[in-house]
Length: 149
Image (cartoon, rainbow, N blue to C red; front, side, top):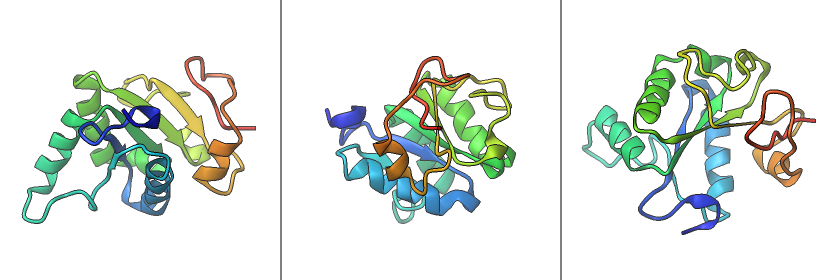
């Protein structure tokens, strides 16, 4: 098993809104340089595959789901469906909060699905910088480190 729980057969699925693609891809690169296998669309959708089917299959096979949480993600029906699918398959769901628009609910997705963990960028310039600062507990983050402040 790779550092952080990812393996070649069981990657971490990264869910994000289209507006957050740059941040999602940076998070993917960060994790993969540390030995965590990730699945992210559209990169990992095989040519000729049905896009929606590929996403469902990837969630089913994932060890966990990282949701890049932003105001765009909170409004995205695609992200909502991915989170619902992950919850129905009892996947660990980790919220990676990247803006203040994702703070409502303190780790709870609007559909009422509780996130297993919630991390946030705070004032960090990049995912890597936030990760290097180390996890700290904070209000509303009972089960995981919070990279804010």
